[in-house]
Image 1 (cartoon, rainbow, N blue to C red):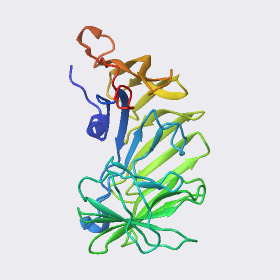
Image 2 (cartoon, rainbow, N blue to C red):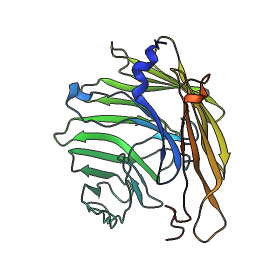
Image 3 (cartoon, rainbow, N blue to C red):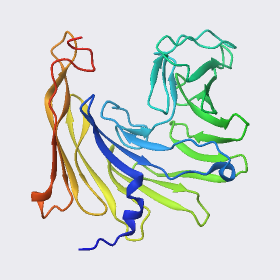
Image 4 (spheres, rainbow, N blue to C red):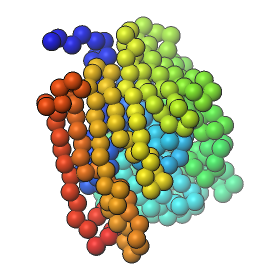
Length: 300
């Protein structure tokens, strides 16, 4: 049997996997490259990711959010788009912050605003600068509003009053990405809108849950997502693929124990990949087992 679907052209933009360290299943939509400023950069990955530890709905469904750098002023925690996270000791306007957890100086973090109007600058050693400013919806959360190359070429990110991403444009006034919110029912992501390279992804919701992701294919095939709520968090339990097949994930509800208390974080015990739902004999099954020592610090 030969599979014929335009959706396979976009299969590389989506992937789900189990983090073997945490035992959590996550999923990522990698938005196609923005090619800002006629390929002169900056190259900022725009990834919409699912993390069950994220119980907040940022506008894309509970657990889903763009993997941008962010600084939480209330906890003094800096999370970078690279996936790293650090405790920050802010030294005030005009001063670089102290980051004790930083083993290698891959970036600097500096307060470039004032006490009344704080702004922060992240300068990466790989030739990227990010300016973080507070959300109108929550002035303790800082997200990138401007990302630049060291030569000064950049992109501007715009958010609405709820903190949802609305658009990304470059210094040549090219619209690289726009998001259209249709109430609470769906969101359309337009990559390079108004050009021959235009691609559209559609997110559809059931309540606060993202239930389907429609890929930019003429046959309108999509991913579907099904969840199981445990310990007050959403966990992906079943996914169907736009090009056929599905994934099923089983969890141990009393999984990783939190240190010193009788509470547990569920973790994956079985991940089943079924290329053809009518032929489960050829499914790929991966099982997971964990000791009492875990990434939460229990047993350390």
